[in-house]
Length: 162
Image 1: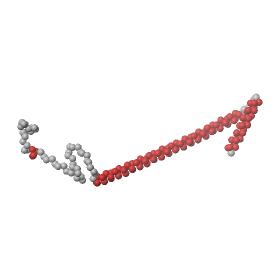
Image 2 (image 1 turned 120 degrees about the vertical axis):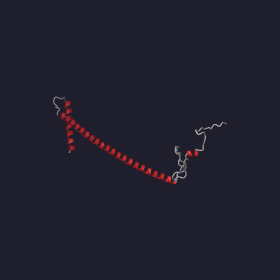
Image 3 (image 1 turned 30 degrees about the vertical axis):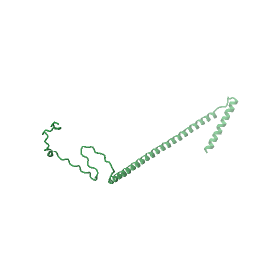
Image 4 (image 1 turned 180 degrees about the vertical axis):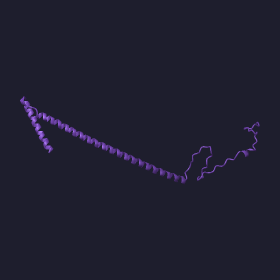
């Protein structure tokens, strides 16, 4: 073909000086502790290691796994204790609120009982103070029986109070 070089250089193809100008690339050294893998050249992606891990790597892995398990267990125990304390505090608050509600209900019941007794006492006084004059015989009979009932219930209350 033609005597045209594929790549033109400014010195027109004299390659005798190239050996002096280009430094030799160093041979990569092996990684410490590993006889299988070479150090990767700079500027290239690190490839994933394949194969079995050495016994030293396995021991480190197991130590790390044990330490991680212990930390996780300690964290879980602390979390459990915190939740237990929180639940106990919540249960104590609920119990205290329940007791307060029970006391309030009892006070309300006692108050209603007192009001009911006052109303009954007022009704009894009205019955006892009702005049029987100027009433018909049927009306007199009714009011007399009402007065007897009031006297009977008053005696029953006095007997219970003793």
